[in-house]
Length: 596
Ligand SMILES: NC(=O)c1ccc[n+]([C@@H]2O[C@H](COP(=O)([O-])OP(=O)(O)OC[C@H]3O[C@@H](n4cnc5c(N)ncnc54)[C@H](O)[C@@H]3O)[C@@H](O)[C@H]2O)c1
Image (cartoon, rainbow, N blue to C red):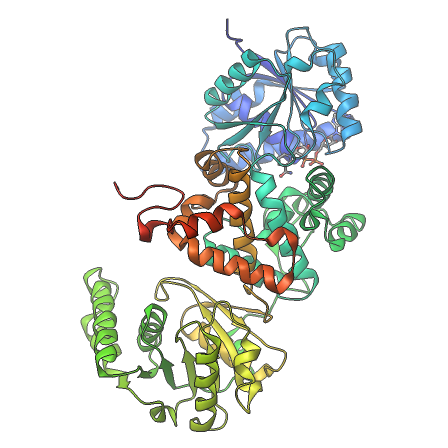
């Protein structure tokens, strides 16, 4: 007969434990909440009441329900209080010896039929289980942060976990309104195995001054639609916990250098900068435990004046190219009030681009987002040309031609001859080194990358790519232009993948490797990232949208530039591309799209 969990115990009331207590108590389960000392117990109680009070303030929880919820929780110091519970979830710091000690103690205290679960993120559930005399009743229940909000629970079965224990815990997750994915005991399970390489890489970018914390976070939020940027997420997880998870994953997960914690993390932990819980991590918070970020010495001064400081005035913009990106960018500039000169390879191409821009603007009119007069004015601001000579008097050129270095270099050499001095020359390349393009001119200080995202009229992000020769004035101009377009410009160095692709594609590639290793299914991996981390799409959904060929090309570039063994493209990705399974555009990628 299936177990009926009427009372559970939670050990450790930190970031995760307090949230897990809330999840159970909200769902009518009695909870015994255990900590190591009175002080820690009070901190745990404060996290719980803070969270439930916020839910009441937001109208998400009635006051009476909050009171009922809190009345279901009994707080206690020491594990003796757990003698009669049906299930215990351990959420103490991520140290194997500590968890083993706790499990040995739980084994002694708890009734023989009780199930013992760990919320570990990266340690071996099997190793924890052998500290007890009932390893078949030990299981992983990996909740996500914040536990009351995130829908996912990874249920981790070891080789000795009884199948009835797995089934009962799965049923319990459903009762709690959670979605579970059941997997075997591997470092990082699904979500953290895919997440932590990315987080560590983002910290590495910050440590190397490749981009500011705000720009790294904005890039991933606006470029990928993530609920928060990687550094803000590190603060939410807690830097001490993140350090332990990375360290364990490095040691357990095949010594992948990408999991070797970036030195800055350890330094911050030593300095007590643990993230939200200590009031300061990558960002500074109103007070310990608060989610409210306050300004500190690293906060950029984002006034209009500061943005325009040192920027050159831009009124007339040349846009070269006639593809998807050029078309979108022409629309963006014309709509924002710039005079535009579009240069294509002929009248026919110009007519096509004109039609595409007009159709897109008309959609805005139909949706009520753009007046007819504004549409006509925008179209009227575009001059159509088939010769670069017409760029002689523009203030900025945005190049969006085919992604081939020789073509771009030849174009920049021509622009160098034609354009007046002081013009900013921008390339929209997404994978070529901007410096190569810059050095095709006699004025590399005026050359910058302006990496728009597709579709340009909708996507709010532009990566402003500085080479080692770009002048500060050119960067300031590029940033001011982004702001005038209503976009967020994030500044980064000239490395393969800039910020977004460099952080996104290795994660996608890792997901393919995980599938290839048969650790989980594409559906469960997609689920895990969406429900555990709040991603708008799972990795396989996204790969099918982006195109497997495009993804493979980007991943190859990253691998070739950084020679990071972990970046080597997944063989399965190569095979699918070879087989012509390119994603939605070819009707099949990781999934079959023909019938949809
Ligand atoms: N932080 C996250 O985002 C996250 C997400 C999922 C899982 N986890 C995992 O959850 C576990 C807890 O992580 P956290 O971030 O909540 O840590 P935390 O540091 O915020 O909290 C740990 C709590 O355990 C208590 N504790 C320590 N020793 C104890 C003992 N002997 N008995 C009772 N309580 C004790 C501490 O006082 C503290 O309150 C770790 O295994 C971690 O990997 C963390």
